[in-house]
Image 1 (cartoon, rainbow, N blue to C red):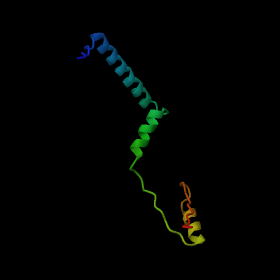
Image 2: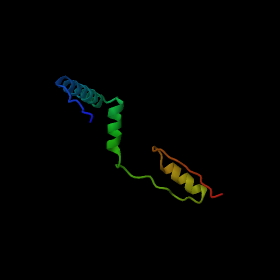
Image 3: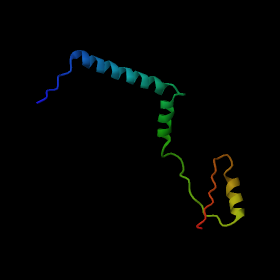
Image 4: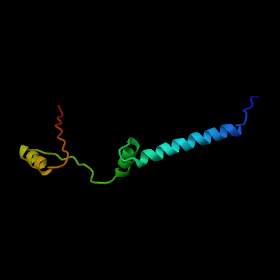
Amino acid sequence: MLEVPEKTSKGRWLTLAALLIVLMVAGIQLANPHSYLSEAAARIGEMGSGPDAALTDIYSIDQVKAAFNGGAGHPRLILLLSPT
């Protein structure tokens, strides 16, 4: 049988030190409002809030104009789908 040697106390200290360094870097990154990690955390926190987008069937160009002009100041997406 193969025996796995137990970790030495030096190995445990190195593991603990590496873990502490990783946690310190993560904490610094979260505290920086311009870092990727804090931006990702903020966006995850925003998930589920706000109204969901809805699809609308439009049958005339006047409906397109009214819906487009009614969404001023917000991102708008127009999808033209055809069954053929």
